[in-house]
Length: 181
Image 1 (cartoon, rainbow, N blue to C red):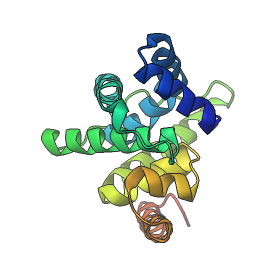
Image 2: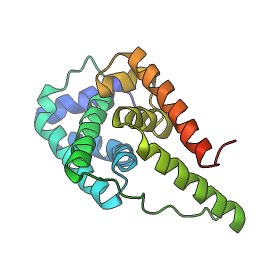
Image 3: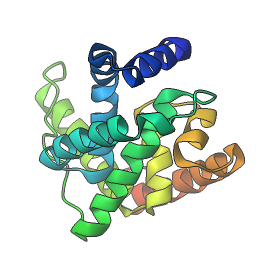
């Protein structure tokens, strides 16, 4: 992602009253945070609102950040918790908005890609929250096992176990729908 020392310095400067430093952190991470939140809550409008809430919470809790850990792991933990709390309050899942065919493919290929993507999203949403979160962080945000462990607050072995179980369950769900052989 970025240089951890750079993030730590920006946090320290922010705590010292330098608003520009916090703005840099927001710009650096708002895209990845939005993408993580969107993969969990599945609605663009909710993801935008939650991303703003995450950064507000980060700003309010900045003095609790422990520089021994990676900043973005701490940030993702807040984003994940906000997303899961939102899902619990909402009580249901919505289809992912904006799945559009890629113009780089022929029309049939583009439609097939969207259809497969839709099946993957539906299967992903059928996973338990703890499994969905690790899949999103690993496969959609390319986080390391160590970073995921820090973000969700579990040992690295637990992350690997959850990923294994989630992948098995995803495979079974996709096979039952005829998406995978």
